[in-house]
Amino acid sequence: MTTNAERKEHPISMRLPEADVAMIDRAAGLRGRSRTDFVREAAVRAAEDVLMENRLIRMSPEGFSDFMAALSGPASPVPEMVELAKRPAPWEPGYIAKR
Image (cartoon, rainbow, N blue to C red; front, top):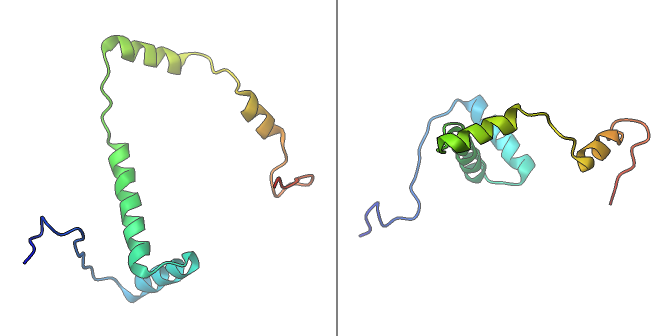
């Protein structure tokens, strides 16, 4: 018999209102995914977001000073971004799709 430590997958059970299940099923169908895959992916993505929001960054006092100076200094234009900003948006007249 296998123990939980040896299992590669662990079941998660939840109770949801019918409206929530219907919305999840509709969205999963639009993505061509099963309900389980869709919910798993959404839960993992949400967990990653929370973990990244609360990530502690450690640096030396000198490194912190350099970091703050870089953030506080004037921004310099990035030529590629300037060029991109000049192009019409897909919903604007003159937009040409690149293939």
